[in-house]
Amino acid sequence: MGMWLRRIRGAIGMGITWAIFWAVAGLMIGVASILLPWLPWNLFFDVFDAPLPAMAVPGFFGGFCFSIVLGIAGRNRKFEDLSMRRFAMWGGLGGLMLSAIPLGLLLFGMLSGSGGYVRLLQALLVVTGPFVVFGAASAAASLRLARRAERQLTAGPSPGSHRPG
Image 1: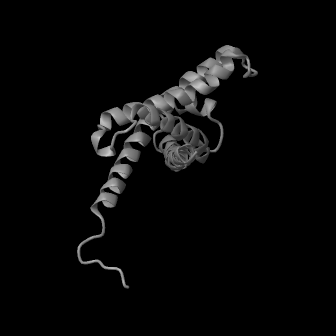
Image 2 (image 1 turned 180 degrees about the horizontal axis):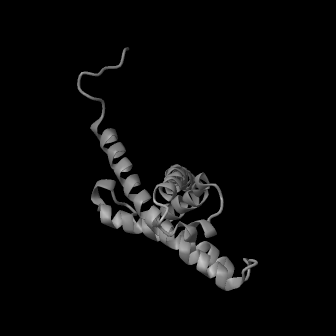
Image 3 (image 1 turned 30 degrees about the horizontal axis):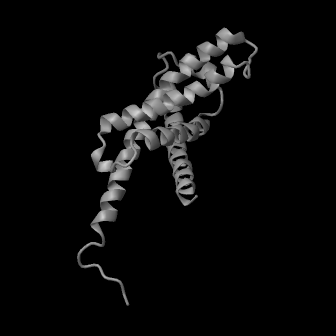
């Protein structure tokens, strides 16, 4: 049972880490929409009408989905053995899985909207791109952090440091 609790805790931790990253990215989208008003921001804002830091919610679930992908694809490997490209690809897959959740609800008739199924499908297509890109970027950042932590753990205490005893 301890192994499963550790995996669940890791998935929740990954979700929280991604939620923070995605909330900041949401704020950056808001700033970019002000600085670059000629880009078609209305496509994104028509779908995602919540306050931009609310991108933390899909970020949490994207990190959780990525944790599942990582648990399957990266099993029994050290972070130093994984390539950045492959890790980013797995993160993009986690973002795609995140997009598949509302699509599955839509296909099983558990999700409906005032604009009909075509409108919901269009909305899913609009958010899938950012979810995949944010997933890949989040995974790459997660790998950098994990490699740094792994190096610090294996290096042990720095020379000259001692514990008062």
